[in-house]
Image (cartoon, rainbow, N blue to C red; front, side, top):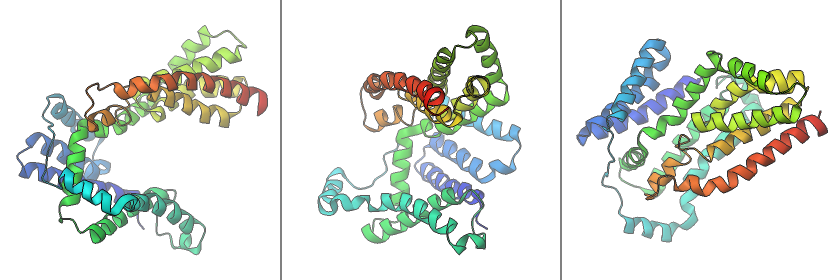
Length: 316
């Protein structure tokens, strides 16, 4: 059986390669950082919580001291890339499209044919595993089609990853933080405070507080998936669903969208806001955020209206 663990090993292999390439170039900080990340993928599920915590703190120390540097490996020149784009055009997107097509089509084929009876993939992990398979297929197709140097994928991956730096793993860190907050009972504490402040029977105000909390916690954590367990435990389930009998599907779906509004307005959502600014070498690192605020605020107001009307008036 192919399990979720195989994806960890696959990711670990790539990070290990980038670590070795950095070591070859004498970039000790980069080599150490990506090497530790590779170790976490290889051995994380077999280590104790304390050992994993030490590993994470070591990575934080490397990034915090500024030891991570941008790399500039020798790959194709700008002129060569322009020539490739002129010759190949939109065909260049074929390898990128292979990944989602493999994941979606493969999942449907596996789940709705006798293939599922073989037990080839771990249950409920089929799509993620097939996503990894799609990456490998796309890599093979790109290498066979474009015939770049053997190390080109590794070098280009390292160049891109070093450009992003420590922010590349920020989503995972913040998602873990959300789980820690939920287990620590932060949601119950916030729910108690909200219950004391919000007047009894005020459904609309409860919706506003829930949506505002989703946006604010997302801005703090950088990830709506990390904010949702906290706000669901605080307000979403005990007040909106159980007390006021709101539609849980509407509250959950649109509540997440309210959190995404917070994503548009925070540098903590590095993979959405800071990473594009870094890759595009913008002078204003918050330039992406400034352009999105005008969309985020009206969208958040719409979310409040949709939750109130949808969960309590239309689909209750």
